[in-house]
Amino acid sequence: MTIIDGKKVSASVKEQVAEETKKLKEQGIVPGLAVILVGDDPASRVYVNNKKKACELVGFKSEEYALPATTTQEELLSLVRDLNERKDINGILCQLPLPKGLDENAVIEAISPMKDVDAFHKQNVGRIMLGDYDFLPCTPAGIMEMLHAYGISVEGKRCVVIGRSNIVGKPMAMLLLHENGTVTICHSRTKNLAEITREAEILVAAVGRAKFVTADMVGDGAVVIDVGMNRDENGKLCGDVDFENVKDKCSYITPVPGGVGPMTIATLMKNTLKAAKLQNF
Ligand code: GUN
Image 1 (tube, rainbow, N blue to C red):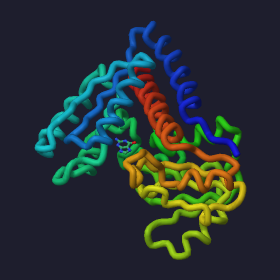
Image 2: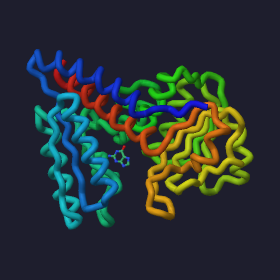
Image 3: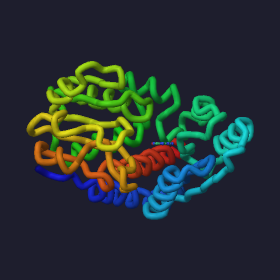
Image 4: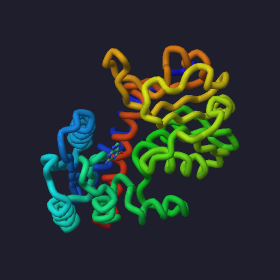
């Protein structure tokens, strides 16, 4: 059993981005990312801080817009429109979820597709479906990169994704399909879930429930990817997979923390670099 080291793979991706950024700077171009955070969700705060730190590391300019939970839809849209017009901002990211009362879809659609480094805009989602895209969503693309780094092929494999969110589950299934996996998406209404997940050669858990995937749900030799970021009964950070009991059945498994999370941020850096190139050349 191999524990996949997301930190290590992420560091090497960020190193590549930093190198390319250095070259861009010689041509007078500094990639810029604007991160919008509305409200005071503590998890979102941590994610945004990590994104800012990564920007510093690779040499990007980053701007944070921390807005109160009382921000109106119009104020938020007005900020996005201003950022769309800025030459020095190449990527715009609005951390989700937004506080109640704000319309996430309207905000996503307001972001210029060229600056949509999350790849959440319907134009980018459609392009991914057709296999003709500039940006891939950060978490699923980060997972694919991690599989590549460990030489894990998807070709012809039975892949099971648990979760059908627009951010992870659905695009994850699409990226596995692009690499010729045979993909099943499971969700809260799926019957006989364990029967399906046990057949998976590659199992991706994106449920949002602590230790949801138990040992009886995992087949021998499976590759298990844990997208979860939860607190267990003792308040300790844990994934969607019951790591301690599942790990010995796996050929590969990602830990939480130190697995998928760092890869999400590494992909964000790649996307922002790409946005800067697309907007300047
Ligand atoms: N919330 C959880 N994951 C993400 C992400 O990848 N991007 C944004 N903007 N918000 C998120």
